[in-house]
Image 1: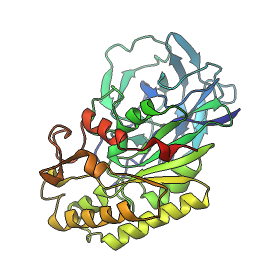
Image 2: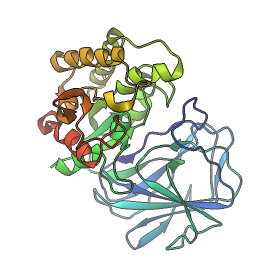
Image 3: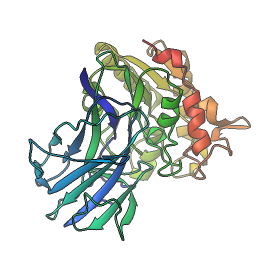
Image 4: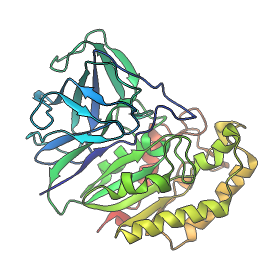
Length: 366
């Protein structure tokens, strides 16, 4: 048996220049969060992160619930844990078997005033926040509800050594922006329902880029930590490019060229292959409906050029053509109206399913 990733979530700093969620701090509060497992095992442990914190994080008490089973989360046998600034911690193992598709409910009590939280800002899942220590309470009364994850980076599961684990490494089209909140209808969720063996954990960050920081560390910088650190990993799926092309105008940066994006994609492929992984790349999805500040004629032309390269290159072990799968046939730079979340840049539930269906499962086979 081996500890590997049953769930992951991409996290970022609350001090980013461009923010799509509200950074938070806590004091004498319980935060309850639902984690939807991609894979299961005979036991579990929770990964906590203070990666971008500037002071130590104190956890006064914590629990995990699976259905009607609840267990205390401990740290070296103690109920109270401290995660140093800039670091992560893993709880002691909990001997509750879990399966793919299980929802874990993690409750964390913060007795002292925290720093701004390391968080996932657009996870298509709500956290609930209540005053006081309620980690063992079945229901949080008078709880505030907010779309985010705080201080969580993943769940490890104790699984067979021959488990096949893949990671979806990318932007909002993996994280799930535009899909129904708390319904597990992200593209990665739909893909997991198609798999007959193994699973895919989700390391998408809305706004994340291949080449530049701005909303999370860029892909080439976070690849080792968010991809290569996962035990039993066999494949990496990537979707990047929309934010590289759309954000420079918003941030007053020079435009990204097709050559720069191709060089970045080749670098990802080389690093995946050097680690013995297979890499499957998505074409860059359409975003012409996002408005003139994001969707420029030059950016759309670069998207088409890079997509032609992705479709024909031998740099990857497979390609899934999400651009064609979700495009409006009469206006291919636009998302099909039936698949558009309404903002011209993100997929709704049907669009996320179409994205998942574009993946050839043979490309994920060992």
